[in-house]
Length: 283
Image (cartoon, rainbow, N blue to C red; front, side, top):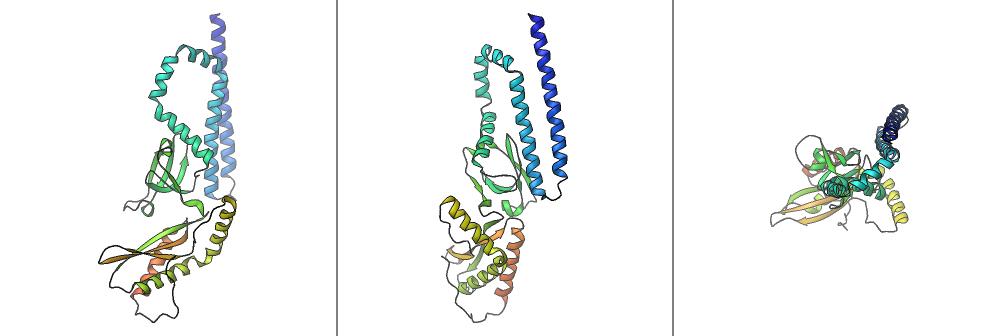
């Protein structure tokens, strides 16, 4: 009987090694094939490679469970109390794994999306069973540091909302705040800010509107207007803010914001000219 048991263990060990070797070879071959696809963008290739790694890990885990099924059942029966203690001790680990399942099933976000998780905003560069990695830049975090990587455990997906800026596809609604003194000509400032924003987003505004119409049809909800508009916010008795909402590309929106601000400041500092047309207030 012990000899048969030892033989079964040896067979399971060999099967596990062959499974690992097979999955490793498949991953190398598929990885090379994906990297050779120069017709795909870097973002798509990186997304495929991340999916390949996670799929390989899942197949390896399921394969081990299948190979060692009888041993696992025997072990589980004999250590029920220990298993219960392990569940309590590894609660966070289990929550991370369940969070990965929740993220995948709900399609909350994917590699390349701009998201905000637990107060951290950045671009998703990696996803795995335990965590999500964000590339946090100066314009994403609002801080003065250079780009950083933030690793966030998937367990936080249950206690915090996940904000995804990819609702408009390749564009997002961006907010630009311009402070003014209450003695400044805020109507002229509003008009100049809208002119700069319209000039910047005019080439792709029609594409954004078409995407919004598609979303409204597919998800059956009404979205507010995505065209540039300004909201006036009274800050205090000496200052007010003009808050410009404008659709900008996800890739390079910081540069687009700078172009809008530079165009506004150039027109704002020029001698005031009587407006040729009336600019409507923000909705």
